[in-house]
Length: 283
Image (cartoon, rainbow, N blue to C red; front, top):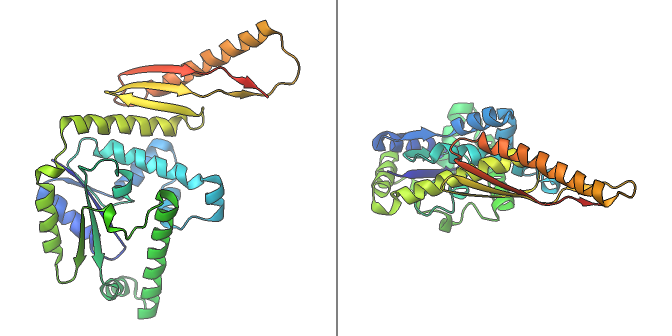
């Protein structure tokens, strides 16, 4: 049993190859479903998530890192989905979101620009020039956000286990190559790796949920979670007596601990929670 990610540009037959691969393996095939799940879990419009993974990062995004937040939602939903394995994923940057798992089979599908343009012209009723301009712009934007967010080049073959060019190789040929690789021992997920996927899913989910609460360090091991909340800053208007300061410190830490533990226990798969909140500081 395995997890397969398929990276592709638009109109490169990647969707068809993913679907036929999943059918041959008896796996689930997912793409847009991850956006829908992320949208539902985190109450974010699906359109915003789609824009965050398609359009090249703007200057505002680079300053505020607002796009990173949306991508965290997508990563969390993806990890939650693939933790049981038997999945072919052909959505946003699966090869990068799951890059720390060498046992995930990462595939890149390429197709000639002329073939891609012909498919686009047929679907959108475009001229040859319009189709080429559309494809070049789409490829540019995908390359830019990959470069910005992951400091990687989408064309780097080292990011993938297989790079397949559709042309002389048919869709069926590509499917058969992927199925054979996915069925091998190198990409079989062990129970230990499955546990690691669950722990990473928990950590990713909590990073999103706690991002508005505090700056936290989160670790999960065998579904036992340990959270350390960094010091909270408090504005100091007047001198405060030591006894009052200690009371405020204790109250803040107790309230924050209860809130964090409550959030952590609401996450599926979490078995135990330990939370350490550092003392606040005044400015």
